[in-house]
Image (cartoon, rainbow, N blue to C red):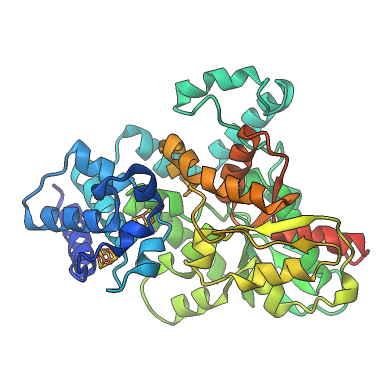
Length: 432
Ligand code: SF4
Ligand code: SF4
């Protein structure tokens, strides 16, 4: 093995060891892990993964198909670390093992093409989104009548799956790089990291963010050269690919003199606030950067002066699902609820097990769809029991996965971002 890769592999394993050595083998994680609850396999729970890592580090276990399967059976939902009495972060062990396996075995042709070329160059994803969007519109939408779904298995997707409609025009191409504040004197200069899903699928979220922020005195800047934040690349074991993306975005955003950097995707927010620390040299620049990153709910709640009379009525019964990377990743749960509760006409109903993972977990619901749906079935049951018209949340993959499974259950509830609902209320009052 190349010396640099060998050193990197050893570093990853040593860092994994630092974590799993704290494990007391108490088994508390068995009672909270969503994957273990569905599969009942000890290797899939944090304690089992810690044991696995220990044996790999000591040289008693070689990488095998069984090891790789266990390491990939993790949602990175952070429920085990939130409940672990010994303070272990098993998802960090999993991440390091994935990196270690990649440095030992290589990334493979498909992942290398996807992460090092397609994601990095960005335009091929935009082109693919437009082509898929055209197919969706020309071939009976995304519903069960769409004949294209019979081709899904060729790409490794279930025929049952309901994909969201892709935008024909990316959000980033609809706006100039600098969007001036619309009212009075500019109060703040805010950088907006749209994320790939906001840019190519949930473009109404980008519109909602821009409309709200500019109406409340923010100049919004959407740097055109921003790329994927690296989370899916990181989760798939490509340390080098993730480092390149994080460095790119860090160097790009730090050139602007932003008062804040907002993100409407919980995983992008976690990555820019915390995961970036794994890749960028510690120091004042990094501290200043991460200190400016705000989830959009957090930013609107704490930094904008939205008065009650600015909000118009919306006639919905709404519940809220906590994305893992917002509630446990960033400690944000009150802000989105408070924003929803303030909207006149909205009847807010708390969701049973609102903070339990919905099973989407980024690419997990692409690679382990059946388990992801089993986990999500509990979420759908609780949503139906809540008797609501709408589920609000703050993460694109949660929206995608919950909406998919609601459609499969013929359930009429809509799934939307909190910021979209808030924008509708502000529009209803003529504020934006
Ligand atoms: S809860 Fe923590 S200490 Fe207990 S077995 Fe799981 S990882 Fe180990
Ligand atoms: S992060 Fe979530 S899925 Fe992964 S081991 Fe912990 S509880 Fe289970």
